[in-house]
Image 1 (cartoon, rainbow, N blue to C red):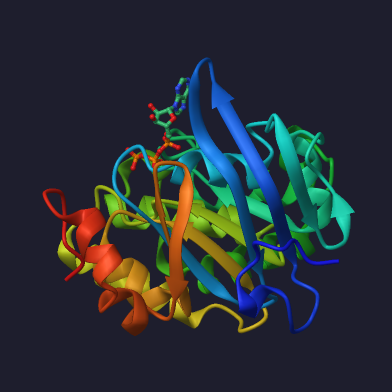
Image 2: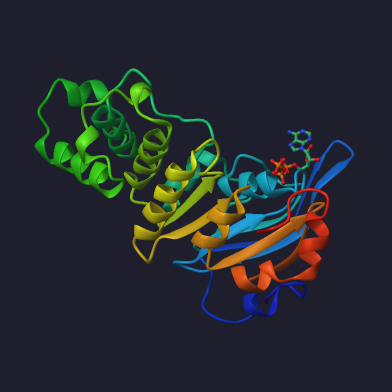
Length: 262
Ligand SMILES: Nc1ncnc2c1ncn2[C@@H]1O[C@H](COP(=O)(O)OP(=O)(O)OP(=O)(O)O)[C@@H](O)[C@H]1O
């Protein structure tokens, strides 16, 4: 049965790919999340926004398995994951990116994608290096193509422009063939042009791929998302389409004195 505090759109419709119910997280005496509910539908692009300290990262980390809540439930594809660590998530087709680049700076784009591919299959990079695996080589090229890095396959990751490093990060997540991608502030630190490219890249991903992002850049969040969830003080304040959220007076009040959605 649906949780009574679930939003109307979350009581009906098909089974969500991610279902969060009544999640509470306390850090010492501080309640970072106060009984949060959230459903994410297959193929949905969902952005979580809110002022500093709202609990966005904590909720994201609960879904990613990096924070275990004191109470509540996180069901991914029908599997209760609340006490399963983050390393279990890839088995369920969940990949995440980090704000700080995780690619190995001294390796090439091709090698980093290989690492993601081989790591996903439980193989070792050294094994690949000692053998010619044409299939994996082709796959790495396909992944690079998916994130618009075909021309940079032999470039050293640490020497890529910031935006390209973010593309590589996305590629390394895509390499695991996820159904759900959790994006932790994908636009942070990017120039205006790079943010534009990022939005276009995210929009180019397969329709079936579910995206959850937390993002400070309103423009990016509102353009990528089908639905926006607004949080404040560990609670969900409202949710709706970007247009609904943009015109919601509660959202303006929350951001008053900080950053008004533009
Ligand atoms: N590991 C931690 N230990 C103690 N307090 C924490 C920890 N992580 C988060 N908090 C606190 O929990 C609250 C929610 O933090 P969280 O990072 O989830 O918010 P946020 O909405 O992501 O904020 P920001 O936009 O600034 O990243 C904040 O008051 C924060 O200081």
